[in-house]
Image 1 (tube, rainbow, N blue to C red):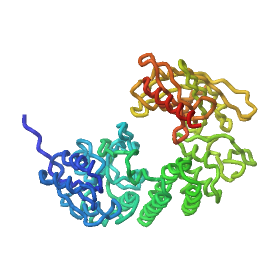
Image 2: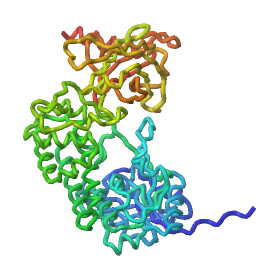
Image 3: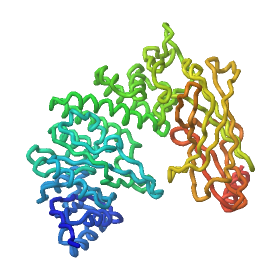
Image 4: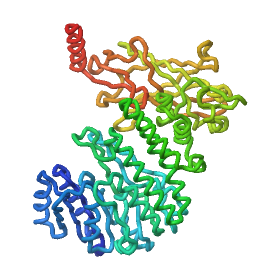
Length: 540
């Protein structure tokens, strides 16, 4: 049988790294393993002080396709070393790889085939965020890549601005050079925002493919967090706004008004929403400064920009613009959650329409009267009382401007889902019953579910609670449950395990306020808790 011809070597993979000797070899090997389509791999070491350079030089001694560029000084960011790679590239196509990530098998072939067959200047594919050490993979912007497509002009697909990554794409080298498309140099955080805007502003034809072409490793427990994860300081938020502002200016100056508007909407839906969710983890001084900086930046948006954004980000932006001082932060965090929820109390304006609060009646919530039930920001409170045999989960569903009563809540499907594998471990269904509670004048409904937590898979450590609220009109809403504290409901408890005898469980509130359950099997987990409790008693 005659073998197929090897693909012509046309691609340069630029690998950048700084003080990452533990991972850089894996990144380089994943690029070299792409096969004959890769003409060269250029590894740019940004003046590391660990042994990264030595690791790269040892690899280069045995691999003729690998070139190492050793920068004499550290650039302070990711843009300059990538620019060095563009300058050194001798191949028709170039792509980028960070030292702590990898390319999956077949990535280069898939991108190169799409670019050459359709004559596009850019080819882009699916990026997978892989959480480590669990290995759980979450697709990045999957809506863009669910169906292969050729985009003749970026303005015809405004959602392209949502994918600000540079690493899941293949570029024609002469396209970047003739258009002067480069990364910001030096210490520039979120340089991808600006580079991606420059690419789109140059109006390339783009091939979109559904293949996974990049594995983004997310190491939240690393000693030094990556730029995208290190959001604790206010400088990170300021850098994000600065990069976003420059990206929007680039698109506006190029006459790409649709893309600029989509970029502002994306800022509200993703950036603003993400940082709002994390405000309870910050100091009061941070929150005050964050509010002022954010309010000043949002004041530069047109009303049409805000109106164009999806509801959660739009509502958060309008609350911030309406108040010079931080207000309603816990409630805003719940609106920013995924899925969003609007917690009571529910106010109405003088004309009876829904508003954010009596204090801020200018922030209207009229969209809640027409929003599909499957997208309504319903609030379901949950308390889990662990017991040795059957644990009791109590759920409370709140009315939302008459929409819940109008649809008629009937049942709720309860699912405990293994967070690491996104796999279902237990499902139960319960009926709602209407409450007669004077403290909830708008109405509420309660359901109780018995859960045998000892029957869960003992190899899974964290279980998330997911709900599907069903209504008499045939609609439903999938959501999470807000964890509420009460006597004994958020404490570690030993429960019966038919296989191991005993298991330790602890309901807790996630960073987003959702109810989840930690599980530790066996006697050892119980013994650790007993020892901690004894130490606390003795220390009193």
